Image (cartoon, rainbow, N blue to C red; front, side, top):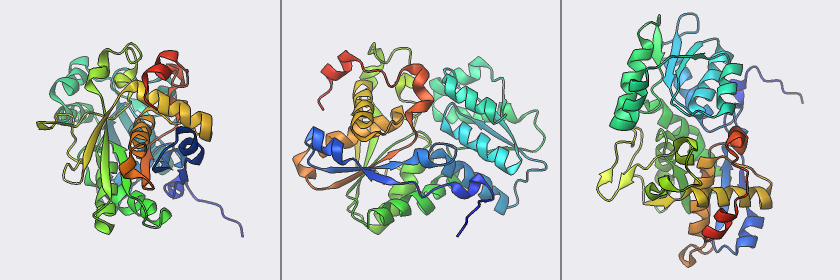
Length: 338
């Protein structure tokens, strides 16, 4: 029986989970790793879920309509691409402010979707890194000043971001693993995916362990990392120290649902990306590589023998080819313990 979809909005979600059996064998892993491949979403990342939910929830509440509303967001990553794609599909204008150092590929994608790129003063952008997540509100206020009927999508504190993953991503992981998941691994950019997925999974089984991937702060001077946007990690932040949450922890993130925080270096990230491409034919992006690296280290432990570890893999590596994400570096091969 034929099936013709009406819009790309109908294609979001139901992304596959793939167990990396050749990788497990080649590395002699004790645990099992099954990655949630979010690049199968129509605009190419897990942010598709959040972007669509934010737009459609606001529509249901009567807050926005394509005939008058301009969507506004400040981002350098996949949120902007997802918002641009669904704004186009639904007939909205979309105004985006960009952080410095956006990859060539992402700029070209925004151009393709005909997003309006705002001219945000450098001092406002600098404020985000000086003051932390709270300064995003200043940028959104600035961007909305000269717009008729602006609607700031507020990815960092919009509960519809969390709801997208609580309603869909978490249930998909639970159902596709038949409830056998033992450990969930994710990074934190906006906080929505880890919060929503973790909340759903722990309601189903409180014994499921949630592990958060963080970039190693000592890694910033690594010559492999220097010159690469966001320290190479593309949107995941250090959100927790021994003293508690950092200024980069978004409102959407829930520390209460987290069992463990793991630091990962960019060398380990690259190694994980290269191994997955070599042995599984799957080429993922940097934040995905970081969570995969954490999953590999967890799967090496005797305590996790036979356990099912599911890392959320946000996008693929094609968005970062201009940064040579695919390049094999001998110094990486020699410095990583897997």
